Amino acid sequence: MPPRSTIAKFPLELVKTACSNCNLRELCLPLGLNDHELAKLDELVSARKRLKRGEHLYRSGQPFDAIYAIRSGFFKTDVLVEDGRDQVTGFQMTGELLGLDGISSEVHTCNAVALEDSEICTIPFTHLEGLSREIHTLQHHFHKVMSREIVRDHGVMMLLGMMRAEERLAAFLLNLSQRFTARGYSPAEFNLRMTREEIGSYLGLKLETVSRAFSRFHEDGLITVQQKHVRILDTQGLKKLMTHERE
Image (tube, rainbow, N blue to C red; front, top):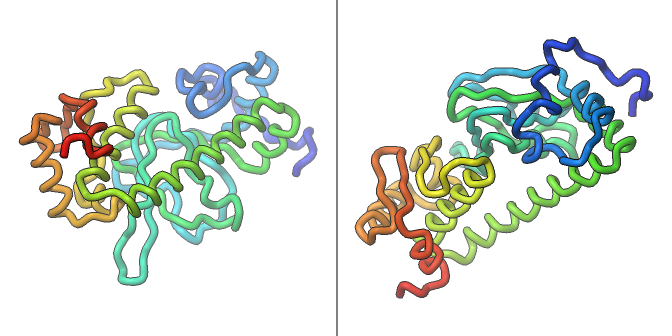
């Protein structure tokens, strides 16, 4: 860990709209910090970067040196599997963190790709570790973030191992709804940033199966779909589908 005096300080123009003034900080960074602690937190944000749709934030095998808070936009993470396909491992949205995959091995184990024009805040990991030791609230929150990622991974494993195709898609849409709600957006109406093929890759389903499930949900009055625009008409119906109550 670098000595406290060597923790980088960055020009004001880089941090004036960083953590202390960011309306997303309650999602990706902790509440309850005093002004002095927030000022230190601001100093961690070495840069903000904009990425175009399709641009990589990082690639598998690259050295790990930072985590990234998504200030705006949408990303996917994927890995290259043995048969040459890209396997989608997750979708990340505004207010969430990217780059945690590289902590243990110090190299990134997946690719992170912008699904739309996006903006991220770069947080050098060694500096974050140092500050976390000084500010216990930050350390506690970072542990919670890592735990949440583990729980999410376990949830995906259960999703793929125990659910049928329509149940997987219902769970996916409900999860997106909850995450949009946490960011102050409509829980029932949103645009899918990912393709149906990418949804299928994530859920372990063929493209045709995903398309049929969307059509079935539409026919059953659970959702309406217009290209990538989804409107959930019957949230309880989707939940019942997952518990087999509609059978």
